[in-house]
Length: 229
Image (cartoon, rainbow, N blue to C red; front, side, top):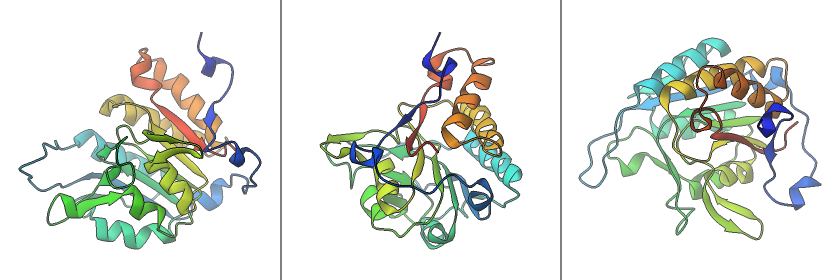
């Protein structure tokens, strides 16, 4: 038996945040303007080997259908377009490559999007935390988006950057994830958000995914960072 069999689990950014006030989850508001990104076209780099993510593209289309939105995929998933639209979006969903860094969590922690060169498409944690975001939730459907460097005020990294920028709830991953199982889990998560708070919606998604992918490696990577309600 696992903890998720009994209760939902979330990670507080810091002890201070346990007493901080946050607006209750409002699915109507969250679903009103979603920015969904999947499988950006990443240019060739001599220093990096970055494979395409066809599963993430399928995931973006299927999640977008659930939310009645048009996703940004391939060449349309540019950093410029995302940075422009993100402040106006109430639901952020990124199915792309993510990088975390213990040694340089603000510059080395990043999400990858389309651009002329690979490096120009990096949205770093430092840039994210300086953005003015108004989303109810951000889903970082990428590898290791919950990692970074431990600090007195919590973990410094991509997820914390979104919280500092104004997003009270971030769904983050703790290890490398599989395309197929992640797609199933995320579709279930979004469907459950219609009737459940985010932490409980993620728990239900884990239980449903576990029925098909029983290994915890496939269903237990994601957790909710921030307020569970």
